[in-house]
Image (cartoon, rainbow, N blue to C red):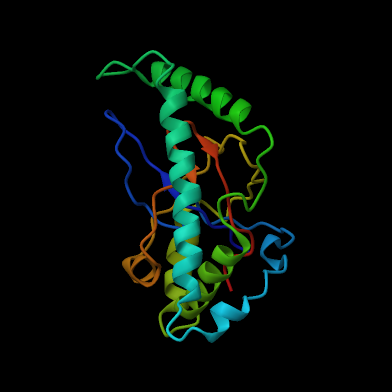
Length: 203
């Protein structure tokens, strides 16, 4: 099954750029199912109010979680020496690993679902299911898988380093246009660590 996450892309002057909810690379993995956790039942007030969009509420909560992560990232990186404009690959690697250690220490208790809540995972799975079961679904899925390099097998671990040898897939516009507009992340490329992921995201 595929695993999904977004990447937080920072370059030069820390700019956050959308890559997609699939940009962590689509890999063939066998995971359990974090999204299987039961969601809280809707309150009576929510059920009675017409026009309430539960997806919107979940995305607002997701945005808050992501914004908190971004602020933590900025705070931690500010404690490190600034990379020169024309940094060498070696300097970038040292910087990435130093930042990763800070992130890992600050998020020592982090677990799957801290950023992608169960409700957010449901939304992503539902949208991806609609895309990949559509008329172009097989072609879209194959184009993503082909970029990840022979269906690379990667063990995803929260705060773990994303393997250098596994490419990060780009995502066809059909998929991006179907997903809700969300903040950047969840592969923190600048720290080269995995902030969160969704297992079994592909239908």
